[in-house]
Picture 1 (tube, one colour):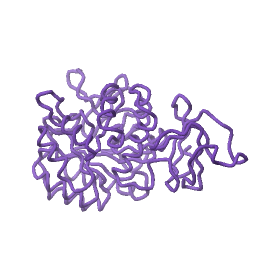
Picture 2: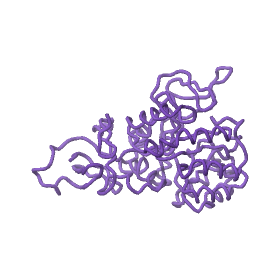
Picture 3: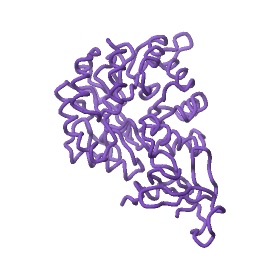
Picture 4: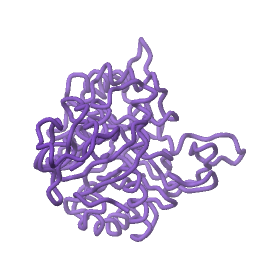
Length: 382
């Protein structure tokens, strides 16, 4: 039994208990509901569900777009040790042959549960707002290529980022939904109407790739992709990814999104790249060189001036904790956005919250939200 403050989707139990039976949560409730003789001593510990990151390119010095299988496992392990108990391995825009090669390398990691699936960020994006994507590999929507990728992955693609205005968007969305993948609209220069229509097109789950990033800023006369995403997510028809790491978004912006959209329609993400957890220095994101300074990853430029932000260097748990501390979001709402909503987005019905019958993925925190222990499938991670 674990005793402390227990965070559930419906609220926080100040003196609560999480009981485990092997790999499963057997009971959750107030300590007063359990026999006193079985209870551990009261504590100031906090228990939240294990984080679920639906957008992560790597960490610990390794990247999913370019490392071998061992390196990819090390990247996943880096995030597991930092509280991410479920992870998608994100790729970047690349030549078709490279994407097929990456699918072949990463597929065994999906099969053995190291990662929960693959996320393709491109290549059907808008070059105008490509960010840290290599514009050489951004192409118009190509249903034939998508079929090749889906066939090669054989159900392992869990999500794909597609620009709203790319060619054949509706057909791409249909193919992805039929394959059980989330259609994630992002890296889009589409206007309000185009993005609104795109978010309504897929018959399956829909998300917005890192809201605000990879799209033009919202203007009161030109609401664009940001305005469309906020409106559709607030209506409950899409989940908005939020990189609340203090670099991609200001704390006030994160607070505004929670107030506007609600935690049931937000997925906190890391968008981490290989430099996550590593010292400042030189790294890569796919084919592009990246310079990390002060913990901020930016594309390396010939002049040495700061380039575009090139992914994150935090974990999704770091984003969760910052959301509580800096954006004044409640523990329950931050945990929903860090675990429960992403699980629902991916169709993972066996995890994402502290509830009886679910997989025992949980984090033990100190009272100041420092990470003390990670438990995945009922087993502490060492």
